[in-house]
Length: 495
Image (cartoon, rainbow, N blue to C red):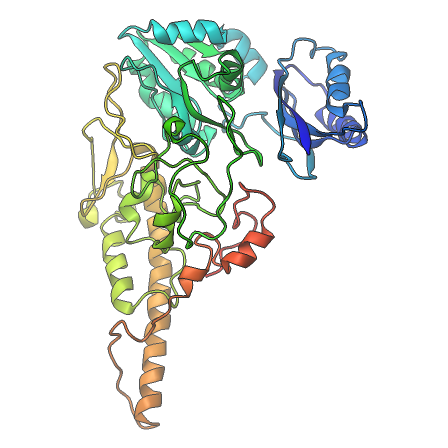
């Protein structure tokens, strides 16, 4: 099977988003389209696809594009078209009203259309963007506006020492806060922004410009258009362009579709799909080249996608992203039956040193908040260091030798505080079971207990379950719709 796919967005006022959604939902269904279309008062954003039939010359996707082009305000939409052999959204069609077509956490208080008109950055064609990177000076700053896991498998590399600043985001809603911290150091810089298809750069440029950053440019059409302009891989893009559907990613030159590994305990070659020379991602554990993301490999702390090669996944109880590697021995979702009392107490000791007393931002319990060395490690395991004279902000919670990026500090403390409650409950249950077992062995008149030596629970069942949702890995694989479906996304984790 083959599929036509269109990625698009348009900021234009829509007076009645609800009525627009009703009309579009009916039309898309009639034309046999699948995908996702987000509608807000500020415009539309989405990806739609249709199956290509060898027995028919009709093209439902092109018919829909023709209809949209005939509507006021949509004549100049950049329809980024591509083909694929994987159904991007299965048989699902979602058309819905949202507050923003790109979630910013309501950072655009005056409305995105007005913000972009007043503060939007200068649009550069792929060729102009390529030239700006090739001829970049020490005053140039390149910013990747995407999430950390997207940056991990693909990014621009100039070979001249200019590397992209990576804001360490799990979602774009965190970008405004990052801008607040770094904008003062960018006011005299030439800033270049890029994202997948261009829509995130529209609002990202506004966030920087309205904070006094005067020279902001963005890649028109995003990485998608750049790859179209340099289809043979002779540009400066390296790795894969992450896409939010079952294709997972796109690359230049095109490579075979990646295959999800549903059974991480089976030894497999720990490399990404396709030519390993074009793989920039690295396993967060062993740091070998690897770039396959999957919804059943997510961080135990923040639930972000994690790059973990199959060989490392085999021996891990759970996964931890680059930002939370310091917690890999102390923070687990599944506690009962998997750890001894001693192990749980050790986890608790570590977490107590991270969580400050209530009402204090830092300090107590071995916690300190300080400024790091100006270097951070990205999700792919590479040292970002200082880029173009800009010191990366790495304020973090530091306790017992643990440190975290500034942006993650508050979330880490909150997560650890909740985890301590879970550990205390697990310890109580485990001690109760130990006492019950001791009484059963010693008879009805026994009152003493026995120490948990670690041999009472020789439970290796964790090796057979999904590390992300707790179900048996076979059940998890069958229950998931697509490669990127986070298996625990719509239900509580099995504890």
